[in-house]
Amino acid sequence: MVNGPVVHGMDRTLGSRQLAALLSAVPHADGRPGYRALADGVRRLLLDGRIALHVRLPAERELASALTVSRATVTAAYDLLREDGFARSRRGAGTWTELPAGHRPANVASFPADDGVIDLAIAAPGAPGAELAAAFAEAGVLLARRASTPGYHPYGIPELRAAVAERFTRRGLPTLPDQILITNGAQQALSLTLGLLGRPGDRILVENPSYPNALDAMRRVGLRTTPVPVTAEGWDPGLIDCALRQAAPRLAYLIPDFHNPTGHLMPLEQRLAVLESARATGTWLVIDETMTDIALDVPGAAPFASLAPRGMSEQVVTVGSLSKTHWGGLRLGWVRAGSRLITELATARVPTDMGGSVLDQLVALGLLARTDEVLRERLPRLRAQRDALADSLARHLPDWRWQLPPGGLTLWIDLGRPIASSLARAALAQGLRIEGGSRFGADPGTHEHRLRFPYTLPSDVLDEAVRRLTTALDSGLTAAGAEAGRPHWVA
Image (cartoon, rainbow, N blue to C red; front, side, top):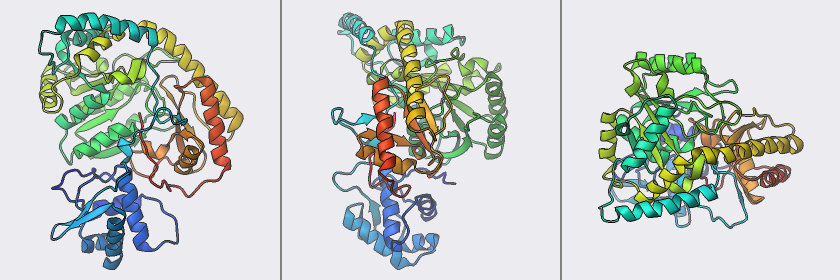
């Protein structure tokens, strides 16, 4: 199991054992010379974002020992990496990771919107047009009144903090504006929280599978993941309790509401069990509620923190955003925590961005006030698209299996065999961008038999996407893991 962090910074060296562990999880075709397989493995790890740029690779003798290969094999692999532009050497300073021109690591790929490709890497709906226009009109009036102020709000504008706090209170968790930090999306909310509460080398309990960008944020901070499975039956509180007590992670990151990517909703009794285990071990719980309002077949759940026993509520940090319910283009999220922690988080964000856009926050204020109208139109449409996708899959790919989720934005499909990465690559050649399950694994190489399929696009587009998948299957697949630099980007 690979728990090592991605290493960042020019003063950092990638350990030989860590690199050996990462390489052991990279599948490769048989019959290639050892040095080529080694170079190809490092190249894939770089493109997948699991090895950072501008870090020093292990010394040749140390890596040869860790891999039980000859030093000549490592030397030849490093030479090949330098020749292809994936490494450079400085006399007396070792070999450093690099990317050649035209290549991007997985987590910063960008896609043109007009390339004719159906994009299913992003599980998020478009903006609600009428409500967005009305919110922008109101924001323009409010913005004019603020033009004479400096416009810096590290905590977020007071009106929006109050509106988000009121939202939590209405859902059953009494909250003051001082307990809210407005952020540039849930991703910044999570990154700030991990950076403040975690230290390099600390353990963090995570679900397996989980949200890839959250896992990347943990690796960037240097946290070591302790995965617990989310299966077809959901969570196992006994396994979570065992992991909390034995691994003693400082933090735990959970998506209990319409889990991304499986769509599961954690039952009440399991939430209570997790809270009790975290109370006993002193583990910080970081709860991602980004999907909370996408309740398609069941009522939305009360905030996780509202179930915390007396004295433990400030041990639960909640992050959320408008990206999945309203529009990701606003980049508007929040943290709900104790007021002291909110102050520390605001202090930590100032060196990075000094606060979010006032205009975006005023627009978000108007959209938040229209949440009921937005969801009244959006949820039935998502429900219909989910059902249409399931029907199309049953007609065209009857051997695949999935559970219809009660909420969220994706199907988590069991392909029956480990072909997801190869299928995703073949699908791109057919004009379909989709991510295999391994992108969501807390450990590399896992969930290769799974595919995340969002239902955020119109039903006819989803049916065409299924048809293109069928064509990709019929065209024949390369060996599992043969990505050849295919760009990844997940939302």
